[in-house]
Structure formats: C-alpha cells, structure tokens
Image 1 (cartoon, rainbow, N blue to C red):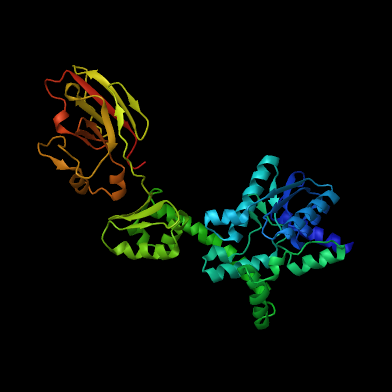
Image 2 (image 1 turned 30 degrees about the horizontal axis):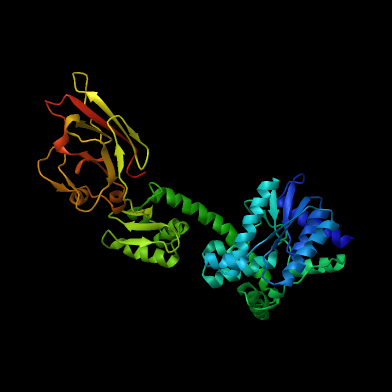
Length: 449
C-alpha cells in the first residue's frame, strides 16, 4: 500500500508543481496498452481525476493491434471509465503524405486526441512520456543536429498536452506495476532496432552507461539547464526580431549584421516558414551579394528575396491571369478593393493629390474598365510626361523590390493602361480644361498588404 501511495502522491505533486490539471474536470488519457500508459491510467484514476480512456488502433501489427484494443477496452471497463477508440490506415496515410510510419502515427494520434478533447470538452490530454523518453529525445535530436530547443528534452506541458510521468523513469514504472500486479501488453516493435528511438534505447544508452553509469541523470540535468537557457535565448530572439524586422515581411540587413550572432538570428527568424538550416546559411552568404536572388522553402509556400537593404519574406505568388471588369459606378473587393464614381467637374470639384485616388476624364474612357496584373512589355505615359515608359523601367527607377512588383495591378481602358494602381496614372487620361465629367477611382489598400 505504501508504494502505491508513494507513486500516486509523487505524480500528484508533479502535476500540482507544473499546474497540469484541475482536480474537478475531465482528462483524456492516451492508452496504448503498454506498461507506461497503463500505469498512467491507474495512477490518475487512483489520484481522483476523471479519466476518459482513448485508444488508437494503427493497424500496423495485425492481430497484435486488435489484441491491444481489446485489452485496453477491458481495462477501461474494469475501472468503470469511458472508453473511446479509433482506427487508422497509418501506412496509407504515411504513403500519401510521404512521411515515415512513425511520423504518420504521431500526427494521426494527436490530431484525434485534440478532436476528442474538443468534442468531450476535456481539460487536457495526458500521455505517458517519462524521464527516459525525455533522455532518448535529447539524444535523438542531438543525432539529427537540432538547435537548442531540441536539447531541452520533453516538456511537462505543450498546450493541452500534458506529461505527468516525467518525474519517473521506466524502471520505477515497471516496479510499481509489478507490485500492484497490473497486467500490460508488450509491443513487439519495441523489441527490434527497426526504429531510431528503439536503437537509442536498446543499444546506444547501454554503451554510454558503460562509460558513465550515471549518464541518464547527467543528460537530465543538462536538459534541465538548457531549458532555462532556452527561455533566455527565446526572449533575446524576440527582442532581436523587434529590432531587425520592421514588419512581418522584411528583415533589415544592416541591423541584422549588427547582431552579435547574425547567422543564428537569421535562422531563427525564417525557420518557422520552412527554411532549413542549410538554406538559411545560403541566404546568409548572399547578404553581401547583388540584389535579386531568390530562395524557396523546400516544403512550404514561402520564399526569400534578397533586396538592396532588406530580405523580403513572402508567400510564393500564384500566377494571376484573370481580368476584372469595373463600371462607372462600381466597386471591387477582389483581388484589391477599388471603387469608382462619376462626378461633375465644376467649381466644387477638387482633384485629390493622393496616390490612392485617381481622377480621369470620363469621356475618354471605354467601359467597362478592366483590372489585371501587370505584364512584361506593358507601358504607359506617366502623369506629367509626354513619352512612353515601360512599367519595368518605371519600377527600376522607383527601386521596387521583386515582391512589390508582383503586387502591382493596372487599370485599363481598352488596351491602354490608365493607372498603375496606387502609384501613378496615365497622362493621356488626365482632367483638362475641357473636361466636364470625371471618373474618380479610390484604391483601398496597400500594395504591401
């Protein structure tokens, strides 16, 4: 009885310390049928938490998978707990997503857990990761070449996902199950070296313990120390982000290079958009080069354009071939917001001197007007000038970045461009002394939006 009480009180103390659960609300417990999850379910139940048993059948081990499902259902029934289960075509999902079976199982499991939590309005999802799992995670991430975050081990809480067993190691869990005479299932895949984590558990850690019998405790201490450092590091990154990025789409190159660790900062600023560390290094090497170079994230719809003074972070553009018609008293909400209004040119009429407003001689226009993306070879006669100018030359003169050029729309009357929207209108369609009616076009937005 003492060992049972000690185990429950130890886990409860860990839950209280890290504020993982409220005592009076439902908690979903992920139960595979293995030793760790069975122990977690019994401990939380005996501690008084309102548990809901959740089991995933990944159908990866034939009859063994069905055996585990039946076993977990029986355990839930013996404890008089609600039982929820789901079935996954894990191999098919992995093939469609082109990811490993391990990753597929992880994605499917946590997606379903979160759906279940929302449906049942549970306070949290408890999983049975323990201290040894955290140690394996540190080593796994070290082998993969992760950053500082990956060396902090598994955290007690991640959103609604909680891990009450991180204060325990695998040996303590197995000893407790033995003393309580509680049965559990053994996953045959855990007895092979087929998966990287199992290789670390069964082969790498034993060798490390030959060098240092206390290596698990040493790794745990290091991970705890790095977790504190990571908090400081994250705070510093956010302060640098505020200093270096005037907005979410631009990185000031000059300010970046003033940082004590510019290459590290750059990676932290762009990796969430899918840029790998290797690609980040290539972007960094381009900073002293000519503008115009483009880098694409391998598995995300983002790119970085090297401009003169900034790195421009933007989504990859969709090719726009549509034209949009607009009448004399009309409005448009897509792809940009425009409105048109016919006005008499009299003593009360004033031409607004804003780049977001253009006023044209109404009688020179052919309706409907059309809005389209600019194209190579386009030209117009800029307001105040008499000669033609290619839009590409106009953009170069104005030092437009590639991203800004891609966001330019033109308003046309027939085949003529009458307005580079939000920029400059065509001189041929300006209001003159003989103009009796004007078409006023308002642009609501910004080409950087």
